[in-house]
Length: 380
Image 1 (tube, rainbow, N blue to C red):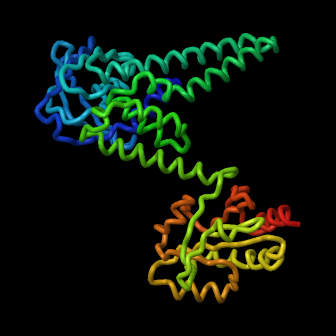
Image 2 (cartoon, one colour; image 1 turned 30 degrees about the vertical axis):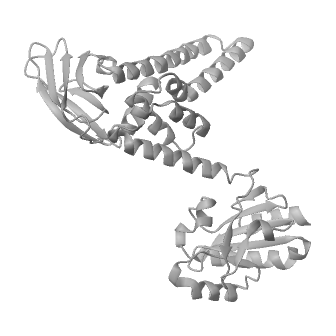
Image 3 (cartoon, rainbow, N blue to C red; image 1 turned 90 degrees about the horizontal axis):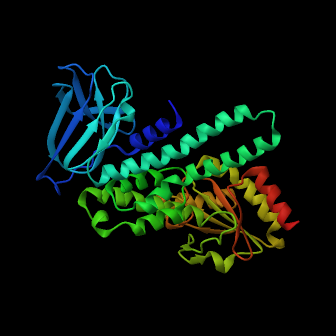
């Protein structure tokens, strides 16, 4: 399977799940499939792919004179695929109200021609643009093979390859900025923002380009919510990256007094996230004790933020005393819902951030010898 098929299959399987709504329940869809060379009586299927794994047939039809006809109630725009018994692969398209026409190629169903409404036009434009880039890359591979004995030409080809790879990497957002107002585009944006890392600014720009009519559809509400959550989470991560200003916070100590991080920070400050119930955290505490004893007079401050539960206050206090945590200790006693933990995007503990006297994060998530070496480097 070539790169285009791999990528498009990944895209489709990533967001081809059902999204039910009654907003268009009074509408229907009609899908006409022309499949020359297919024998009468052969069965075809419209499929929904859930999470890229479970393929469920939502409709079926039997070939008559090389044609299939599908009709049904239209509920919401979503990705579907056409498969035909005896033919390998699937043809993907956007399920829309009204009429959609598919010319299915028996020997290459993935290359089938789909025409229909606005969303299939957008999907076709997306596939065409991506195919243009992959074709160029495939052409470069052939040129590479022919240029092995020419170092200068190889260098030029490598430069072109790097540029095309970058274009491919950014193609999703390039397309979305040109075609923002289709249900297919919203599906694509949901997939792009579900990736481990994405261009947050570009995602926000695309979302701002999308019309209120598109975003306010009841059938799109879940997609819009997920996209916004991904953007918010990515912004939270970037706000606590090395080089960023550490978010200030205020939280109560065991006596209920409010402690504000910016008010107590020293030349170097360690913000330590832990909990009395966390065994690795308790194992790490002697490291902090040694560091505080050795470097507090040189400007080190520590503020430990506990993720203990509401009913564990005494356990938290006892752990502070037992582990000799003689610095600033705070907790909202809200477990993983602690607002300070959320502010710092904490999903596992122990976790530590090192902050300089200007409040800039200069290191994160160091433990044991690595943490000790960093503090020594900064304060010795």
